[in-house]
Image (cartoon, rainbow, N blue to C red; front, side, top):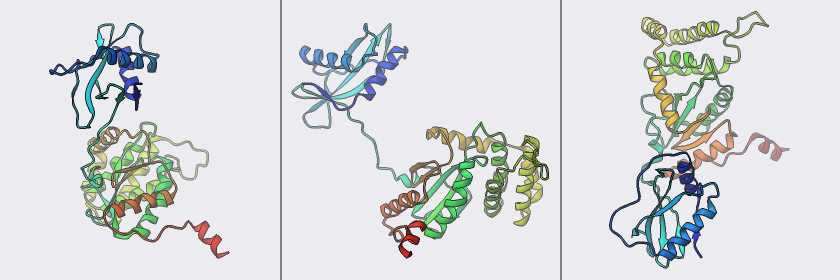
Length: 325
């Protein structure tokens, strides 16, 4: 009996054929052909497992090639329909012709701790060589980001101190009208003063629900012009506290160069991020405003992976109070 370990890639192949995608042809290197009986069983299985495949599709089975798995040979399969051929999908066929396997191989030799770029950004916590690197993709107009920012990062610094290095990268979403302005403004401070940058991020997140409204007008609707002026003022005030070069800061605010922010957006999109907030803890992705104990557990595992002993297991305040009562 012929079996398949996974069929998700197969279904992808057939959907590509259906929509007419061009791709490579099967391997042409010299090799032994699959026997007619085995080829028939493979084709029969594929047609049963992919009912949406057009009936007139031709299933192409390449020649057998050596593999690194004992007892198996590599074979590439494509599907052709209406003049188009899918990209080849590689399978492993057992030497006895009874088992068809699909195996995905991933290179995990690289250190995931440094897989997400983090150097050159204002940081909080420990130095850039800290055991744990946290890269957060943040939208300054996102209410969920504000909640995470207000609750999790002070707690992380309190629990881990200089063992964790925290940086933010910008990911202003199109749905938020003043998020891009906020990102550009705070980055105008990034080169001059990390302290002014972070204090501006703190202020904007804390006041996000009011930005765009006119103080004293309870029923006023948020406007972009008001939001822009308020964001500029927040950044200038925090810059003044850190004695930054105000001429340079004003010129940067006036220019509104989005190049650096857009680079961060492209990075987020290349990582398939669909929402904010998103954190990478030594390369391990954590999406959304998740419970603090979950984030602590990820950080603890990351520390152990670096050979560093984490603090004692975290006990939520509610559980701690229950013990005392």
